[in-house]
Length: 165
Image (cartoon, rainbow, N blue to C red):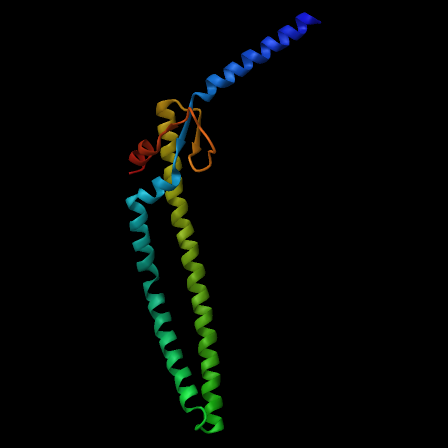
């Protein structure tokens, strides 16, 4: 029985030391920092601004028109004929609903496109991490912001940034 326990203890110790050796091949990468420093991120932001510029300008024009009608209704509403005031009120409500619908649509489309482009960039970063980890022989790469503590993990953020650029 003692021999079995000794053999089991020795086996566990060997397994633990093998696990510690494998832990030597851990790297850290700050994905957020790589993302922020990519020139492609700024180019994509400009591209998206240009893509939605026309719709945003139309919304600004609609908002200005709506404000003008609201001011007219507030300023002249008490002196208008009831039928004119009703007509203007209906027009304001219709314009407000149309504005809200178009603004919601623009917001949804813009958010969707931003996510698409962000995911493309993150895929490029992941591919770069795989290349760097493969070259340097790392078994595990963690996001530096997700790791609570690491005494032995090497920071490969700079190498990943070079690879992505």
